[in-house]
Image 1: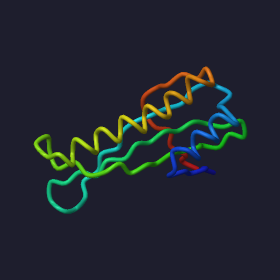
Image 2: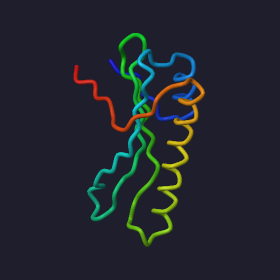
Image 3: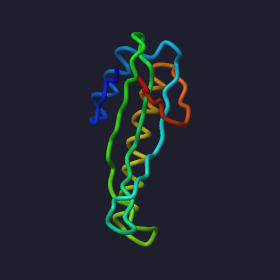
Image 4: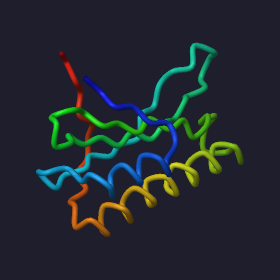
Length: 107
């Protein structure tokens, strides 16, 4: 079973309320083809396993990446950094370790 959030503040609240017993939160940027040419869809993913053994996941879409010469792509990267920063700050407040990657619930 998975607990899924797309609101950063709700995920952070859950993380601070019930931190993972292994003290590990995984974060990554997910880049996916949009199906419309060269456009890349960018999301921030943060995951951890709660005390009940459930994967808790933040999946936050942060924008499109059209390439390095586009202002909208720079804004997407800035938002991704902001979201990652909010998760990392919450993890620090709870004395948790940030590691790269994403937990996948294969049940």
